[in-house]
Image (tube, rainbow, N blue to C red; front, side):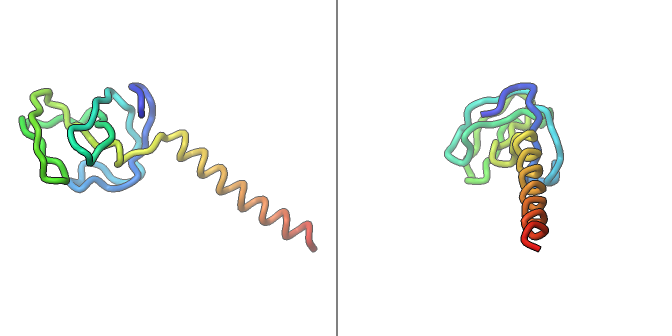
Length: 103
């Protein structure tokens, strides 16, 4: 679960095009999911004027907060994505060093 203040990165484009893959956000708030599509919902600062929110599974729920709650499944912790990139770079470096060592 994410905590307010953590940096997260979108890992896919949003179906309504409100954000694109790779955009970075700061978690403002977290709440439990309203259906089985989400483990939890994240407030990244997007606002909505609708009072009813429709989920991808066709369920809808009341939302009078003005917050566009987003599924956690759209995001990953930024630090974990950066760590993964570093590990991939290190893996490539190890391969190069092994090739050089074998020569």
